[in-house]
Amino acid sequence: MANESVESVARVQRLLRDVVAPIAKRFAFEDVPSEGEVAGAPCVLVLGNHSSGKSSFINHLLGKTVQRTGLAPTDDGFTILTHGAPEVDVDGQALTTDPTLPWAGLRVFGPELLTHLRLKRRDCDILKSVTLIDSPGLIDAAKPESERGFDFAGVVRFLAARADLVILFFDPDKPGTTGEALSIVTQSLRGIDHKLLIVMNKMDLFKSLSDFARCYGALCWNLGKVIARKDLPFVFTTYFPVDNAVPPALPADEFVKAREALVREVVDAKTRRADNRITQLQEYVERLLLHATIIRHARTHVRSLLVRSFVSSMGLAVLLGLATWFTFAVDAAWWVRGICALGAGLALVHGVSTSSRLKSAAQRDVAARIPELFERVFARDLLTRASGDELRARFDAAAPRAQKALETLGALSFPRFSAADEARLRDVVAREVPALRRVVNG
Ligand SMILES: Nc1nc2c(ncn2[C@@H]2O[C@H](COP(=O)(O)OP(=O)(O)OP(=O)(O)O)[C@@H](O)[C@H]2O)c(=O)[nH]1
Ligand SMILES: [Mg+2]
Image 1 (cartoon, rainbow, N blue to C red):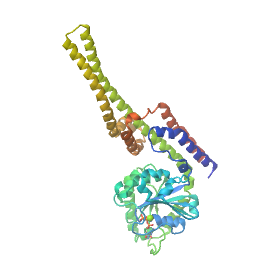
Image 2 (tube, rainbow, N blue to C red; image 1 turned 90 degrees about the vertical axis):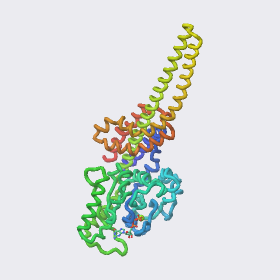
Image 3 (cartoon, rainbow, N blue to C red; image 1 turned 180 degrees about the vertical axis):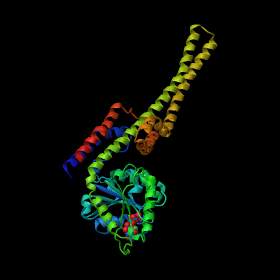
Image 4 (tube, helix red, strand yellow; image 1 turned 180 degrees about the horizontal axis):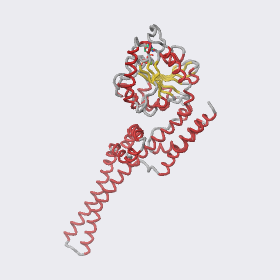
């Protein structure tokens, strides 16, 4: 790696450790990417429909059969392929507890994922420059977490955020119509267009040009519905030579060129690495800023509710207290004095007990009102910013975590999100990130 890239990766690590991590911790935000993750080898994540040829593609890259392939669903887990000898397989438990490996962050997805996760160390040339990740096939309906056993969309989001290249496979059988493929593109791959490559595989299966055109059109149509861009990304139309396949009916030259271009993209993933680490830092800080801002407003909302209720119930107690004092001053009848004193006492008790009840109710309530708060607080930005959609997408990604933090810990348990902390984070995005990009891109 060029010196500039090494320096910038080290700078990203320092910023995450010294500036960003302490603020993330204060606001119960996700852990910052570990130093191992930031410094780890370039990584390519392969996703796609069940049986679309992901494992065949990986075997093609490796130059030998490492991954099992077949028409029945063959992979129900994630396989990380890295370089090394001797060739060993490491299970999910071991690979997420090994401090020398950058995968400890996957433990948050629970033990069920660990049984669907393995690492294969193989002595293949391409693995010297990239780590490859094979994944379970996407299926017709987005399965709920209970069926997959772990948060599949979350794991894909986690891996995609760390990958330098994400390759999404489709095949003529299901050109983008799979429920899970569409939901993965909308939920987990949002905001990573810059490193997303789309592949339409098994071109050798087409018998005629019209079949090809219909399938290609269907894929673009379906992607157009979920990719929030004016222009569609380039689609690599290709096929991989597999055993017992009949020769392609359509002229194959362009498909072979696309295959070679795709392989080149994988080999060159390392050139994207420093840039992706900077993007990862930027996106993390932007998400954290939004998370802390949501908590700040939730906290202010709860506090002002409490202050208002306290002032109104205490106002009554103070008023009745003054009235009691007055009745004593004018030496009113004993029963008038008694009623006033009793009223003041009751108002005081009521005020104190209401505010403690209100405190827990308001904290529960504000967690559910986050979307409403967001619309109110960011109303101007959502209307006037060219990137209003982006802000909304970032909110959609940040809201569940903020909601959970507020529900479990309560808005009042968080410290104030100070102007100094906010300025520190904004400085990373506005000054440090562009400076790092200038160093990397020359
Ligand atoms: N004709 C043809 N067959 C292919 C091509 N790529 C893969 N296949 C075949 O399609 C079947 C599925 O391929 P896999 O590589 O196992 O697909 P996968 O995406 O890994 O499938 P899952 O792991 O089950 O999601 C296998 O029988 C492959 O031999 C291709 O380009 N053309
Ligand atoms: Mg497979």
